Image (tube, rainbow, N blue to C red; front, side, top):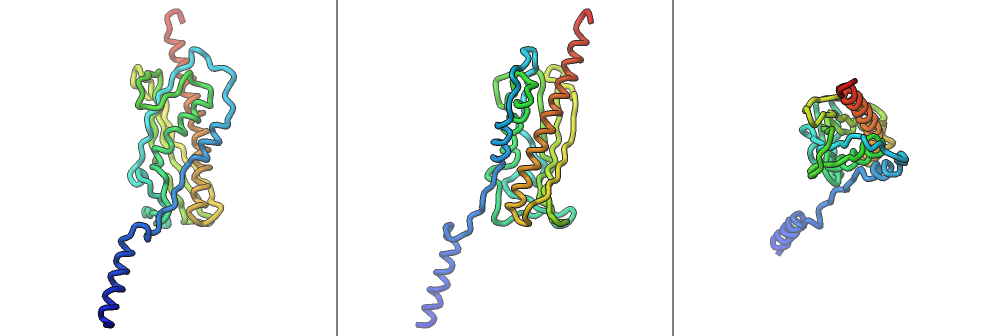
Length: 216
C-alpha cells in the first residue's frame, strides 16, 4: 500500500512538471514608452517640398541580441539571460517603428518609409544593434545600448555618413525592471542622436547635389 502511494505521488509530480500552466511564465517588456514619448514631439509647421525621402531598412542585430531574451553581463566576455524576463519582441523589430517616428519628427524628410515598401527614396538608412545589455560589473548597474548607422545615397549606393552611437544609463534598481526603464531612456537618447545624424547627412547630400547642378 505504501509503495502504491509513493508511485502515485511521483506520477502526480511528473504531470505537474509537464503542465504548462504549472510553469512560471516570463514577464514581457517592450519599448512602447519610448514610442509614446517620441510621438509627443511637436512636428515642424512645414517641410520643404524638395526635402529628400528616406527609406529605412529594418535594423539588424549582432549575434546574441537577435532574440527576445534579455541580456545581462556580470563578467567581461560572458553574456547571460534573465530566466523569467523577456522582450515582447526582438529588439530589432521593436526598434524599427521607433526609428521612423524619431526621424519623422526631425522635419528633415518629405517622407520616412520603413521597408518592405513599394516606395522609392533618395536616401537609405541602415542600422545594426551592436549591443543592448544590462551590465552588473559596477554599482549602480547600467544598461548599455549601442547602435551603428549608415546613411546611403540610393542612386549611387555611396555611404554618405556612418556613426556608432553608444549610451549607458544607470539603473534605478538592481533587477530586470530597473534595467528595462534604463533601456527605455538609453534608446530614447540614441534615437534623438540618430535623428540629428540623419539631418546632418541629408544636409550634406543636398549641398553636394546643388553644387553638382550645371551653371553652379
